[in-house]
Image 1 (cartoon, rainbow, N blue to C red):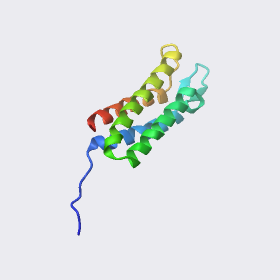
Image 2: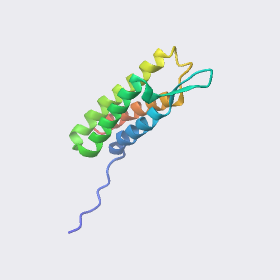
Image 3: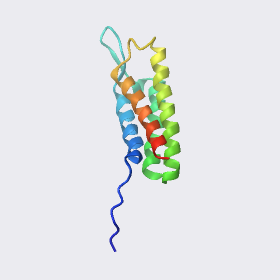
Amino acid sequence: MTEEFDPTEPSQGLPGVAALFTLIAVALPWMVTTAGSVEPGYRTLHGLLAAVVALAVLVAVVADPADRRTEVSFVGGVVVAILALARYVTLGGGFDAGLGLYVTFIAGLAMVAGGILGR
């Protein structure tokens, strides 16, 4: 009547946590100017695309079966990392890059790692 508790592997939760961190990082500053003004990620095209991809990964982790979860998290992580890297390059080498940009890049790499470990 009762089934034995079957815990999930840590690699199954890693893409979901990384997607949540990406969504939080989009609200953080992606660009800080010397005058003190900040530009959050959601005000840039790169940030909006990263948020949409992170949301898709989060939905895939929660709703999809295990066979599709790994592919979606791997591809989504690659896209998020490339978007963060592209924004970093357009800022001229990151002299004005804010904390949110770095967190987004690391979260993208974590999604990729979760996709690889979940296979």
